[in-house]
Image (cartoon, rainbow, N blue to C red; front, top):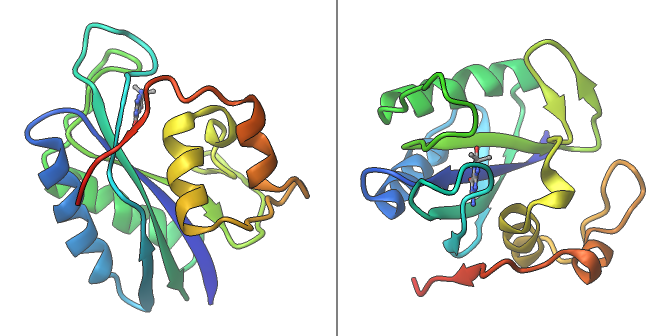
Length: 161
Ligand code: ROI
């Protein structure tokens, strides 16, 4: 079993409900155990600014699935929640599930880059992740909690439950 951290994001069609539905689906993943969920956070869009603010969260699961099996299932959840893959890069989305970390594994395949390439630069990933894993060590050997010293909050806001 590996501990996997998943980044959740949405900015269309009642984003908080999208995340809640995603969590229900993640709780039902086979060969897996749901272990933690951060608060929801309101965040300013990274990329084009002419789109709604996002709601982001991070979840932790324990899984016996392989990274590719998990990716298949998270992509299926995205599609079932009406994710529209638009042509526009970094455009708005109903639900995005990113595999941030998969145990200590470093994965570079056609389909998967783990750790997620944006992990340490995105306040809407780092702060929710820190909330549920305050002592996390990245595969690079860097401690996650040292990154916040140089990472601006950019109006990130923890939302009440
Ligand atoms: N911006 C924010 N704030 N949150 C996201 O989840 C997010 N996801 C994306 C892009 C378009 C890069 N911007 C984002 O895919």
